[in-house]
Amino acid sequence: MGLTNHQFRLAARPVGLPRDSDWDRVEEPVGEPDDGQLLVQVIYLSLDPAMRGWMNAGKSYIPPVEIGEVMRAAAVGKVIASRNDRFAEGDYVTGPFGVQEYCLSDGRGVIGIDPSTAPLPVYLGTLGMTGMTAYFGLIDIGRPQAGETVVVSGAAGAVGSVVGQVAKILGCRVVGIAGGAAKCRMLVDELGFDAAIDYKSEDIRKSLRDHAPDGVDVYFDNVGGDTLDAVLTRLARGARIVICGAISQYNSVEPVKGPANYLSLLVNRASMTGMVVFDYADRYPEAVARLAEWLAQGRLRTVEDVVDGGLGDFPDTLLRLFRGENTGKLVLKIADE
Figure (tube, rainbow, N blue to C red):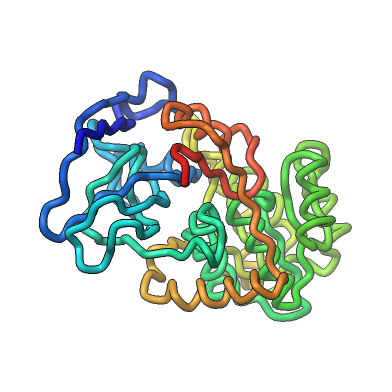
């Protein structure tokens, strides 16, 4: 075939923010697919806060990326050769293809997608793991009821922006917590949130007293740390907290900061539950169908932050997540469609 693949492999486990020295840039020939395999040219890479956790050693909900392995990442691509009965040359697919230009896959975890239904990056966002996380975390664990108050941290990010909109569709009052006036304006003016709190310039506890005077019924947490502690002081009786992520803690060189105000769970008969999207794999079609319906009806808006670069832009683009520079789902384009 004569193609050359470029990859990013994990060279060292980061301490704090990932550095250039934590990556090996590898170049190797592209192999031909064997029986059952397909060869995918990667077009869009999904960049997610969870990637930082995958770089760490130790027990987690998914095995860590080992030193010397291609960095794990979801992606969208095009099949350029196939000996797999499920996929044909020219098909567009999404799957765990990793941070590389080409991927030889056995088809596990690979899903065919239709670019005429939605733009390809949407299959990494609202119609991908991002949307699945928002949907199942909010609906199955948060169990929101019409009229309740839902608070979302990281609300201008990939998951948070979908959570808030779905909560509005379900009849809830929604308050988003985000960083910066521009993001807060977007949440209210474009995505339909009832209110937004700028954690960079506002006192979260005081603002929650104003925006959630009767308390918080559902808190969808993507941030952890001080933000979680602040919301814990404003819980309504029977509140449900969904622990989806804790981006404030991922690059800390200090021990993880746990909630000091956890006794509020006892006082308010509240619950705090961890959520991992992979647990709902057998129900993904349910979520995709419902989210796609809301998109088609114009009730749900998908927000992608697409960086048009190349594979070499991966390390710096990943850091945008932890600098708070992305709005919505962060995607790196590395090839033409």
